[in-house]
Length: 83
Length: 276
Image 1 (cartoon, rainbow over the protein chains, first blue to last red):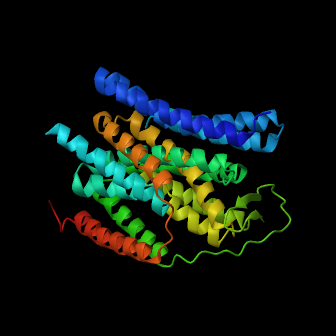
Image 2: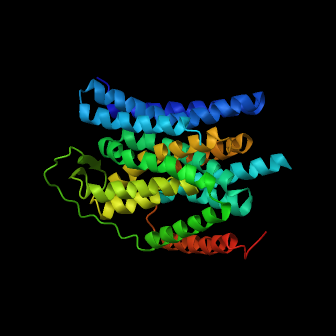
Image 3: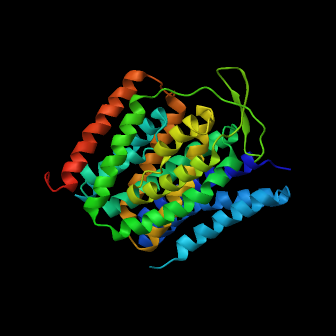
């Protein structure tokens, strides 16, 4: 099984590279694409939390799975909260 | 001249990303100072852009630290249960605070960072006790040519500090490593290298949790985000590959003096005494 470190390292690398490419594309194509690039950048750390949850679940490490799930919940609430 | 402004931001991003990687700072402190004092954009917009810079540099450094197994992922997840809600709270708090309050808070954080930088005595004393919580760790130390095992002391204080770091990060847009690393090292007795790597790992999520609030409220300037993010990335990339981490005490003291200077400037600006 692939270890957590390698997977998370790749998630971060791909996320950052992808957002840089989308931002560059956005310079040519306009605001909507720029918006997407910024969103991709913000989602990169979110994704790595998501993959950590998946890793803990696969390893039947339920305590850390629940802890990670709680962090995801707060992230989602923070994203959707409209005050 | 819009183009000239974007090029300036890009070049400063390279500088901040490179220096950040060399000094082990996230680059957030330099970016926020640049945006508020040099570019002179409203502080909320400056904080939002700085958060994006922090996400970019933290993710880039993070991918290397994590691959080299310096990061304690379990400990990071536990501390994130406090730092992430703090970061969300901080962002909402900041958006309801007037700009001069945020400038004053930033000035105080810089002063604290300067003090920490002055007495950069690292605690190398690590302990290894029974690891009840399963959050101790180990890593390969290049200098010692061997594995270093450690357990985590005083988790409660660590959780409280993480909450505080999250709130501060959400308000002033710096990521909060400057608060977390000394506490993890001195109080929780985690070796400095593991503290720095684990803190960097958390900083990305902390900044993202705040950034998404600024983003959904439309505070992120999309045009300025491009040179900011690309500049920081280029700087961090070069910084981690070309330069080695410096431990020079002179550089530390220079940094502390610079931070104190800008802290005073910001205090004066927030008090309305200094206007430009």
